[in-house]
Length: 184
Image (tube, rainbow, N blue to C red; front, side, top):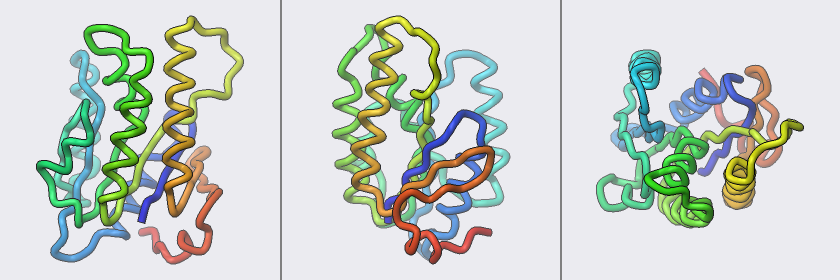
């Protein structure tokens, strides 16, 4: 099952994704939290530690991977349940490394589509950042377009597509399958 979750920043996407992943968890199968945020400073490190502490009760095995998500195939058993949080950070890591890589979204999209196709269950979190009216520089515009490209590609592949708005769940695709998920 592929569940794709998008919505505005700080709207409850991650906590909802954790609950959904927990309901998809299978006994005696791996249960992974794929953390993509690459810490840049002490504030980021504190945020990551807080997130780890907040999800301790769910018993995820946390794997930090900032780039090349396709490499999960080499190191993990894909027959389990995964939560990938987030596509937004993954794209930023790939695009804004030592140099700006304008077409990084193509690699991220390819790698995500490849790896999620092989996973038994996966819940993916992304940020809906392309609806404001702010004027951005070309690099930021390319990042936003790239994220939209990835979201569109993964949404087509998803069994369930969810938008989260202030902790409210709006199911855009797979309503019948979503009804089967019993959120804790």
